[in-house]
Image 1 (tube, rainbow, N blue to C red):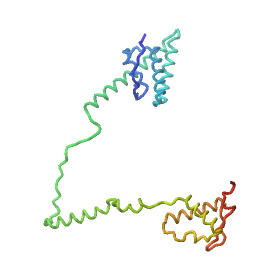
Image 2 (cartoon, one colour; image 1 turned 30 degrees about the vertical axis):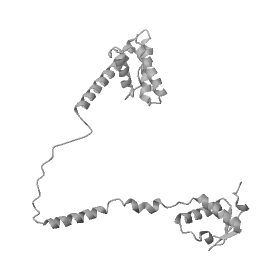
Image 3 (cartoon, rainbow, N blue to C red; image 1 turned 90 degrees about the vertical axis):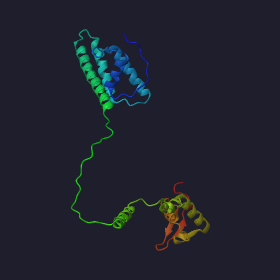
Image 4 (spheres, one colour; image 1 turned 180 degrees about the horizontal axis):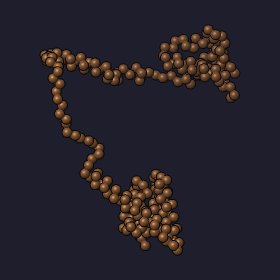
Amino acid sequence: MMDKICYKLETFEGPLDLLLSLIVKNKLNILDIQITELVDQYLEQLKKMRGREMDVTSEFLEMASRLIYIKTVSLLPKKEEAEQLKRELSGQLVEYRDCKRMAALLRERFSFDSYTRAPEKVEPDKRYRGRHTPRELYEAYRSAAGRGKRFLPPPKEAFSALVSYKAVSVSSRIVYVLRTLRRKGQQRYAALFAGIRNHSERVATFLAVLELVKGRRIRLEGEDDPEIKLLNGGVRHGD
């Protein structure tokens, strides 16, 4: 009977990786697996993984069902099916163990993060016969470098006006429109924009008027320069 083991939770690549880890920690014979004890520890491990909110995919649950089925069949008088299922599982574990060992050996010998090769010999193109003075080469370089600057990102100073630009909220302009109408009783549409030089404030005022009309708090009468009047004292419809 296996002793109950305690160890830190690891990240397993799949159910076979978890089973192989349990076999190694319990020093079991991979060709003669004790399913009765192994399935209990496997289910306990899944429980701990869920408790730590680790990823328990359907593959782990499928293997749990498989182990429980093998354990159930092994309790029957005829155990031929259980032995066959255990041999199939052992074969899979042996193949997985060998592949894992080979992967570790390859990782030690080779690095897959980079690729190098010897430089190839390039024959010079001797068809161009022109000769240039150092001054001509320098001017050509300056010309090429100047064209390249056009593809560089603009300097941060170009965005200073946008960054320091003060945005005006629509809600603040709604308050402004309502206060103006309550003070004056009515107002021409164009008069609401008098003295506004900030584009953000102009847009916010326009959206505020639309929002107030939509909420049936004001009414516009006329076409070219409509008169704006309060409805129900500017109280939101339905309040």
